[in-house]
Length: 435
Length: 89
Image 1 (tube, rainbow over the protein chains, first blue to last red):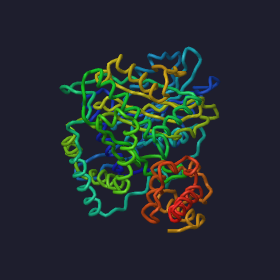
Image 2: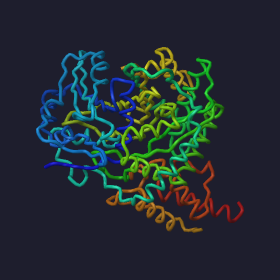
Image 3: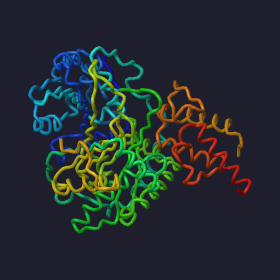
Image 4: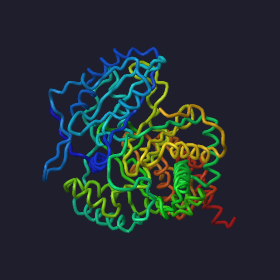
């Protein structure tokens, strides 16, 4: 049965980001979920099971269709061989993982999902699910990991995609104008930028995975409270990340007056598994002056005030309207309008805090899952992505950067400073390393 | 302003059902927010709702994890603060 569904506004934004990334890097807006499998896993059997899974077959058949004056849409195509999108790699090395698997591209004109099963020389085994961000948000990736398990039933038809927006074009247009003026009034011209200079291709991103223990997480929680973080620790994580970033600028003897970034807000209804495909994201924004960033307590208070004000003004809803409205215009025009206030630099960094999201995958095809790592995409500019997550072991921070934004020594220092500020001491982290 | 924590907790549940939760989710005043999948943004919205609708402003010190655990806990905290404020304590 052929499937057709319009892109959501958030999908279309991820397509825009993909276009932005492809202008300067070799890979597009691809996200990855890496599952550390129990060494007893039979990778060939898992691969065979994934290839015949109905949800996987549907996922690999979906393509984006875009034409002038027609709303962009997802379309399933027949005759796509799912086997071509599953690979088993024996005697895998960390170099192969870094160079081949983490940088494998998934263009929107081809299959937007693939699965790589890796058997490392030390006996460890991983499943890496790569997917285009335009088709999957964070919850969607977790759903995908559950949906493509060998023997998993087909995802309910009515829950494949989210409900369509019923908003009339007029309030949508009104919200769009409101947000455009709101964004034009922001001080993007002076924001902190790591990646500058003449346009040119950047290198592939490098990722670092920092795993903090439960004891360290408790220290982080206490520090967050002591610094005035309420409603969870996200604002503390953000403030500390910005402080570590500011130290990079200090080293460069640069003093950017503002830091600016967007924080994703899931608009999915809470409490249920929800849909499989398509993004349901909106954003709130943080704009911090340099002197606020240098004092995490002030930074947290400022972010809290800004987020509260934006929620009160309905910014996430209005921004969703803007994203929906921009599905009606050509991508080049959308890109021009976004770049107008931003000069092609989307933010000071990409930041997200997943909370406990993603901890719902205890096993895959009957094989225990020992750990999960989320590798977010690294749009460049800004060239630095930081993702926080609470997990069973404690807390995980995944850093991704291109060396044109952060040199190897700056990246090491940024990681060290970040951990030191989080834990409030110089204690080494367990399991820290570049993967 | 209400001084009945049970009534207020039910009101908060109604707000969650209407604005935040999937329609199939069962929300009771004692159901932990974490179990419902309610995130920090939604809790901020609840606190703002208390300010807007009931004029109850929760001071910084009241925003402790134990007070933000469930609708019931949040309502009890809000009523205690409102009562203390009304009696000038």
